[in-house]
Amino acid sequence: MPSEKAKDNKALTATCAACNKTVSTETAVGLSGFENGLQRIFAVCVPCANKGWRPPGFKGIYVPRPV
Ligand SMILES: [Zn+2]
Image (cartoon, rainbow, N blue to C red):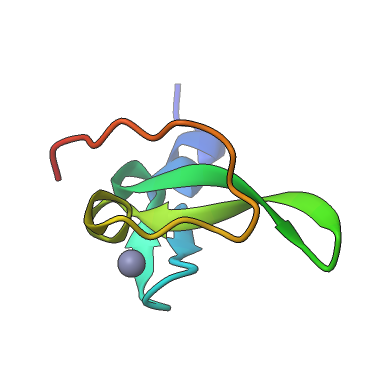
């Protein structure tokens, strides 16, 4: 069955909060941080996350993963 949803999923992109590049959500991770006092999820590409970029107020643990 043709699925419009599947097509949309393929095109899912995120803007890396660190380098501002548009990346596929498959090569990005969501890191929880704070902006203006509010908790939110920052999309960060895997290379930036592996390099150590963390959003402000990040308290979680990030386990580097292969790019
Ligand atoms: Zn990046």
